[in-house]
Length: 218
Image (cartoon, rainbow, N blue to C red; front, side, top):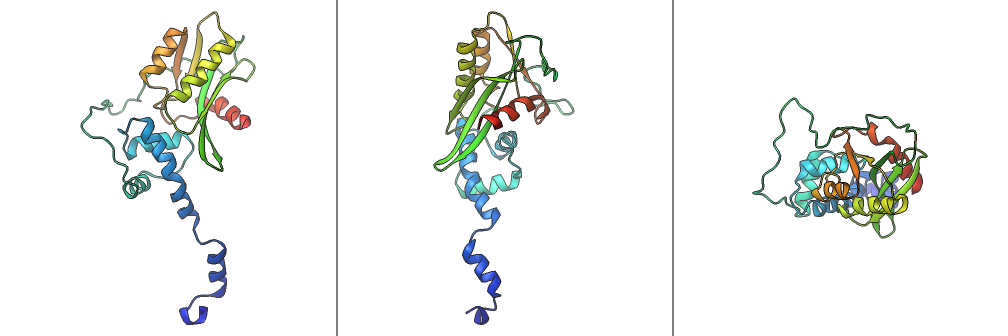
């Protein structure tokens, strides 16, 4: 059969053992992550903003690939809403970076850092939000959910507040992900005497302690 079809036997047997290429396997995995980001935004995110969410999760796919996957899976952003206008030449800052990469603190409950990672399971992907006290690099709060809805970060921070019950203002540092930029996040911090701090968009160095600890927690 290989001779008739002009196919080399080694190529045929390689296809038998692995019928899908690495890219095809990724194309089957990515729609689930894209749908989670799309659902967490309330259906308003397009390829550009979903790309930012995926890059914060460590994914390396490009904008055109996300557009192709969204079109194939009939995922469309809701139009007709106003977006924030960014001024060219200036960094997009939602909350000032108050931590300034000072990862060594003098006492507990002085500064917490938080971030989100994801875990592959037999039933699909799960997302893990972690809150760490920089004083002892100890996980003080966490939450795991099947989607990237903003409740995942609120539940993790709530656990940290319940467990530590700080009697002073605590600095809480995160990136500029949509979950940390929501009004619910800002209100929660105000109600529980927490001071939000954010790194610049796309800057992973400011939350490296959290990403390392969340990996160890897995």
